[in-house]
Length: 113
Length: 110
Image (cartoon, rainbow over all chains, first blue to last red; front, side, top):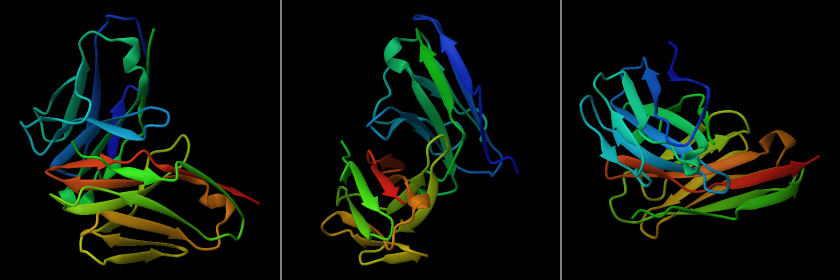
């Protein structure tokens, strides 16, 4: 089992560029989450999904879109990147809500210039 | 808006000291409360999940308690060691999502 994987690991964008972060899990988990980590603010929930084909907004959804076309994949898109989106992005997945955020991926460090 | 708060923000202790942190969370729509340990440059790792009022969990020198009626949880570390240095996150699960507090950063000096 690879667990939760994220691609890419690092990325530098210019303001206005777009990109997609991919999260993949091989544990057949229903719940998947995207969080961003900023200094002094812990982990903030961007979007989440409770199953294939479903998505919902978290605490800080503005400027991001997500899709969950396949159960194992949860994509996070930035349509027009802004410097305020410079952050470390973590994906997580869990079988049920009792698992909390469950297992985390290794993170993607994104810098927007 | 769900608000999960942790205190203190950071804590410096000497090796051998015992310490505790607080997490406060909404008392409505509660499903579970989680504690995670997060070391620098790594991903968070789950320590405990608690679902029932009065739950107590223990793993080695670390333990946690839960009060869902008043909306708080405590994490205790007995006899802190330098390897306990990390950020400790609590997370509230309810309403189909899990929300984290900002964390307590623990520094244990040898």
